[in-house]
Amino acid sequence: MHSTIAIDVAAPPELIFRLARDVERWELLLPHYARSRARERRADGSLVVDFVARRPLIGVLGIGLPVTWRSRTWNEPATHRLRFAHVAGATKGMDVTWRIDAVGGGSRVAIDHEFQPRVALFSAFVDRVFTRPIAGRTLATFKALAEALADESDPPRPTNPST
Image 1 (cartoon, helix red, strand yellow):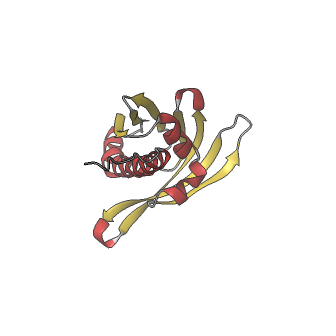
Image 2 (tube, one colour):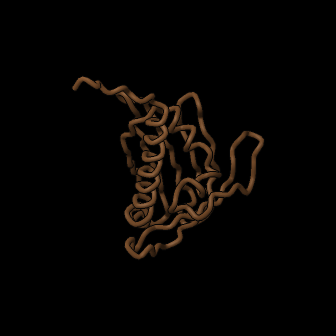
Image 3 (tube, rainbow, N blue to C red):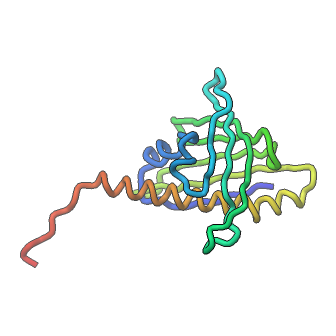
């Protein structure tokens, strides 16, 4: 199963990459993440991280289902890529790539998921019920953060007092 979810962001790719690459801070930056803690730091610079995110069930009441997984993660600064290889949990074997590319005056952030579990229908279930809702919320939150920071870096424009 291949799945892609994407969003356009009115911020430069470098800013989005700097925000998103620090996965240990996701639990602080993303309200739906309860945990993002490194279990292991490898010699190649990659981290093995335990993630816990809440998949909303009844959003109005704030009720969500905790979803857990463990990933080996690394980033590729030259191409603004984030990589995740799921090594434990129900999504063991899933390969995830974040692509952060310049588009016009902003960026397009796409998350590609590759997942080939033993039971083929399981991948469609995981994608619809867990991957898309969590990844969609993650993208929306990073969009809001990056755009707010990008707006702060733009100097205020003077208004024309004669109009």
